Every structure is written in C-alpha cells, then in structure tokens.
Length: 407
Image (cartoon, rainbow, N blue to C red; front, side, top):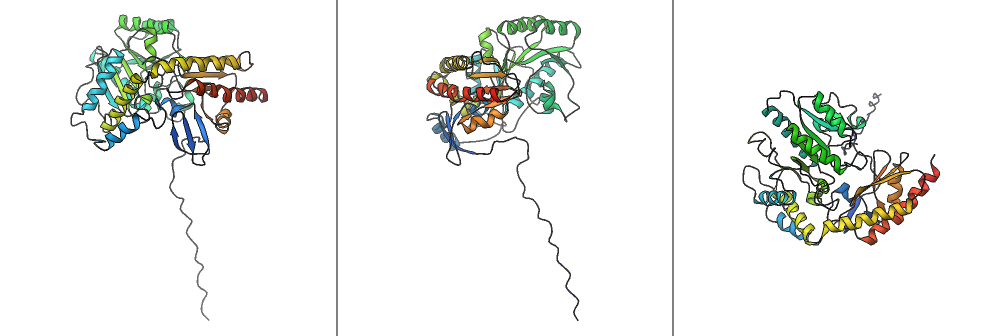
C-alpha cells in the first residue's frame, strides 16, 4: 500500500506592495479638471476650494499654461546644475523684481526652501563667530516634515514619535513683540527670526502688519535675519505678490513654493543683501531643483498672473468670499472667527470639525480642515465671483447643520 502523499501547504500569499499609509484620504480619485472645477473617476464634479492646498494658482488646464509646459517638455525637462540654466536666471530676475530682493536659489518644495533658510541662518551665525546659533520660531507654526523643519514647527502632534528634535530653536507666541524683545535680552546667540507671514497649517493665523514692522526694526537693531515663510501665502494669494508687502517691509530671506509653479513642483529661497552671499559653492545644492520644466512653470505662472490681473482678482473675489461667509454665518453660535486675506481664508469653529471634509466633498466642494477646527479655503486665484458665491451657498448650510447636531 502506497503511503499517502504529504499534504501540500500553500505558502501564505504575499501582500502586494502598496502606497505607505501616510495620508487619511477621501474615498475617490480625481481624473481631470478645468478652471476651478475638477471631476473624479466616477464622473462627479467638484468646485475646487482647496487648489491642491494653495498650489494650483491658475486652476486646472489653464489655456495659456498648458501649451507652454507642453513646449518645454518637448525641449528639455531636466539637465543638471553642472550647467547654466537660462530659465533659472529668468525666473530669479522676475522674483527679485517683484520682491525687491537680490538673489534666488531654486529647489523642489516648501520643505526644501525652509530647510535652505535654516541653513542660511546657521551659516550667517557661524560667519559672525557664533558657535551654536539660535533661531526664533513660533507656536502653531508649520515649516515642513524633515527633522529640521519639523523641529522649527510648533505642533507637538506632528512632532510626536520623531525625537530627538534638532536644537537651536527658541519658541514664542505670534503677534507678541514683547516676547521677542525678551528673547533678545536673554539669548545672545539668536541670529534670525523665522515665521510664516500667515500661518497656514496652524489655522490661517495672520501676523499683524504692525507686528511685522516691529520685527523688521528689531532685526535691523540686532543684526538678525528676518526670514518670512511665504510658501503658502505668497505668489499673489493675498492680493499682493507676497503677504508681507501689505506691511510695507522686506525680509532678508523668503522661502517660496506651492503656487509658484501652478502644480509643477518648485521651491525657491529669495534673499536680500544681508543674506545674499552667505552660501557659496559647495554649501548647498539639489539634483532636481531649478530644472528647466519647473523654471518654465514658474516663469509662465508669474507672466500669466500679470497679464490676466490675477492678483487683483484674488483681492476682489477674496473680499467677496469673506463677506459672503461673514453674512451667512453672522451670529451663529459655534463660529469663532473668519480670518485671512485675499483667497486664503480660515473659518474657525469652537469644536473639531474634520467631518466637514467629507461632507463638503459629498456636496461637490473641496476644502480642508486644519488645526482640528479651522475650515481652510485656498482656491485657485482665478476663482470668479459666481464661484465664490457657490462656495458660500454650499459650505454655510453644512456648517449650520454640523453645529446644530454637535454639542
């Protein structure tokens, strides 16, 4: 009698590789867009009140931007910074023209731009003989998720699990000039102040214009660098090229990204004379930064913004959007404040409201909720008055219903 064949045990199925679970995503995918509208793969249409998180300056499939990018793709996408890149010179010249600053370094993202700013500050301090330079940063700030920018960020929730953080930061509260002056007296190694002109992820919290003016004067007295993170609030979002221009000041270092390329990844650090020559050959670099495609996207974005009056539109339509929200939500218990500038608006509620992200999408509107209880609107800067009214008409009833059902 033959012995029974041994049972064959199948090896456990190996899971297919997939995208790391680092995002809490809504259950749909976008397929295409036009102007301020996008469609998902099931054919549903949404009004884009998020703009790719303040990235899609010119909306989607802009008729002037698309052919320019197609032209560049057909010529040269990437070369290397071993060689001259004429489009870098062109974009740098334009950024310096509209900012009044003197030089630019190009990278790939806001995180990288902020990282470069931190390196500039430290090198600035070392050049002055300060061995352990310190930088003043802010509560509720968000500058990125690398270890250094995470350390400069003022959000314990996103820092948790990634210690030890980088040293050399002194943290203060926004819009408290006396606190900064106190740091100046107690911390002789401070070399720079680093803040978002309008905090984005922290809840759309603007620095007051007189506060920025006070910081500028203090930095001049102390020989510090004033470094203004305009990654989210720059490139016309508030109705001026850069939010700090409303205060009539200039920074020494200005990181940019998000809206600069209208969706093509690009970052920049623009510097004034005090910081212009801090970095030299070998001090900093990047493989992809300043590539011809990204530079063309930046050049064309700024050109189209000028040709089409996009900054004036952001100011006018942003004011109409703010007024519409204020009118419809006036006197509503649970609405703490509506704030911001231009097309960067935050609606703060008195309770966590993350559920509104999905409810707004179901109603055909894309938004975000940041700092747990702040509804953030950062739509494309080409948003028109009718579309702004539609945002109000969709969003305000959702807010009313949410506040009515939650304690």
